[in-house]
Image 1: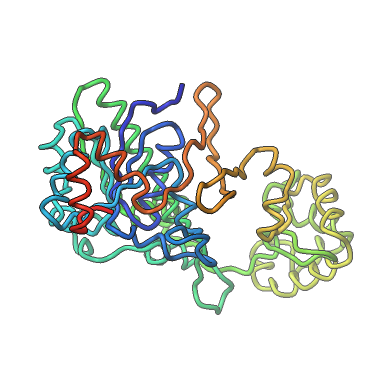
Image 2: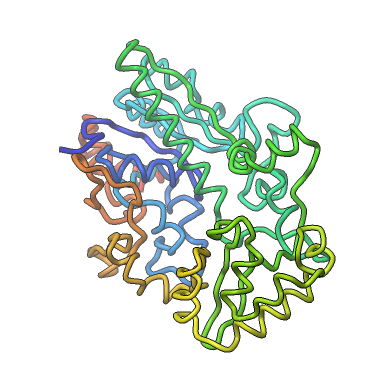
Length: 394
């Protein structure tokens, strides 16, 4: 038994934000039908590294398992008929186009409701469906910039910096999936569907809730800071991130100074208060770096643990993949793709004891399931052949 077995999702979404949401639904058993233009959606050919196979970039693979692919040209009359037939059988419809695009393609909320009145319709956007920025295209790094996230990252005097990976796309996808699940529960109680709206900007600002709440109530904003007590340092064989705020005592500087074998630093007037350390941050960081460079990361992990200071090794990707806790958590999953062989992916992090997630389908090739899905809709094979010749489907 799966948590979402029997739920049909028609997924018009592209790139990262929407596909991240629908992958969650597919991981827990929903039948996700990914609708793409002939040749595939634009996210297939872009990403880190080279595509593993035509139409199968690593970016695409990371967000599109447990889905079936149907390639349809929605700009044609026949493609519109197919879209309406798909939506008529859908519990959930998902898209993340700019406002106005879904209306032009005939897959907007009104059109979906005409096909199925109790449909759950999830719409992602860059900035919202209305408002002064609604017409703009959204993107992960733009959301990082406008949410305040970037303004507090990086060292003082350096340009603001953001995360290179798509953290806001992923966060937005998780929130959008959450909205779909809430709406499905509401439909069980009321019998009515509804629209679920989320913008990347809203997701990013909500992800920065601590900093925003501080500013809204005190007027104080998080700013770039070279904080020696919350920083990564080079060790004899790698790098280590320390987080002294959770030290066992109320004096994290004292605990840290003792841990690194420099107890006198805790009595140095340059470092005895937050205000003093803020003035002498670079000096303290240099002293701590000199101490930490003398021993291995493993040694420091044990020492800091004994002192109640949270620390963690700074991993590269190979170390993440090999870490015993990551492996124990079964976070790396593999599957056999019929075209490209074994594919490794980051698995579903959420674990349910009774209805766990499962990888039942590898990320599909463009149009891999077009005939299968459309035949199930009652479309006859001669029509499929004709539409394929006309470029309506692929």
